[in-house]
Amino acid sequence: MNWDQLRFFLELSRCRTLVAAAARLGVNQTTVSRRIQALEKQLGLPLFTRQYGHYSLTEEGQRLLPRAEQIETSFLGIEQVSRKDSQVSGTVRIGATEGHGTVILAPLLAELTQSHPHLRVDLLAVPRIVNLSRREADIVVTLERPSRGPYIMTRLTDYALGLYASPAYLKNHPPIHCKEDLIHHTFISYIDDLLFSKELRYLSDLCSPDQVALRSTSILAQQQAAIHGAGLAMLPLFIAQEHPGLVPILPHEVKLIRTFWMVMPSDVKDLSRMRLTWDFLRASAERAQSRLLGLTSPKSAAATQRW
Image 1 (tube, rainbow, N blue to C red):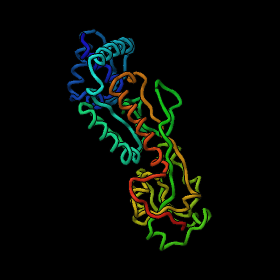
Image 2 (cartoon, one colour):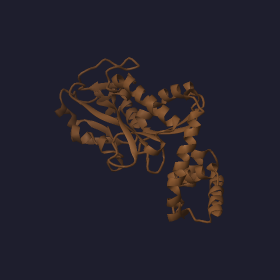
Image 3 (cartoon, helix red, strand yellow):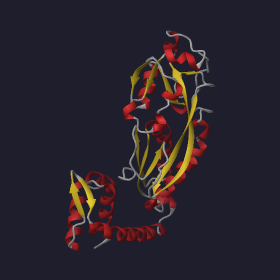
Image 4 (cartoon, rainbow, N blue to C red):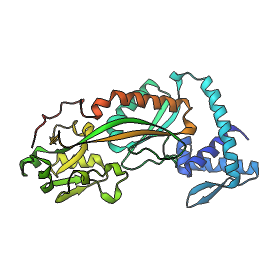
């Protein structure tokens, strides 16, 4: 038995599918399957059961797992001794909400990869929960703090949301002088039964509008719909302030604060590439705090108006 075989075993035990394990290891599915079969033949033990394409550890596999993780820790410790931080290499997969991942994290991660050319970052900026327990990512920036699990976590940053509409929409609809006026306006929102976090259920806290004209799982789609006059939309300020075609509505009365949490499985926290990325994201969030709260913007925002 060698470390390379155990590496395939560990990745499949964490990812649960050949597709995901192959992607993390940088090989094809056939290679993963062949390596697992070779390890099982060498040990004379079945390590996985397969059902509907998902792999689960057998009792023998569960007994091997902690020993394989000990070997992994030792091997990586040796690797870290021989590698300087400037030579950190490997892949880090980061999961994030669509808006934050696209608008905030993507430019920052470009900076990180330029500083560490041997590091590769996979960014999953998606309108859903990125599942850590299934090893869809190594580090996740999420709206909700996990209540349990073998994770380390930190409160990354707060961000603000406000109500926005296009000048064309406001010109063709009744004026908005107070929150009570909102009920008669058309809104853009999330699809209720597809909300991936209770933290996104903010329209009900604002008002019960007569009409929701357009719903989407995508915050960027909601932004575009608002720009093109479909209605009023609650948008993160770090997204809305980037576009001069959006006007803030009752900015001093309608403002919500939400929180981003950063989470990582405990068993990878000592890997140099994970530690580097974790520390970088924490430092970057501190620098971006004012922008996330809407206190500053990289672009000139439209003049605030009370409609």
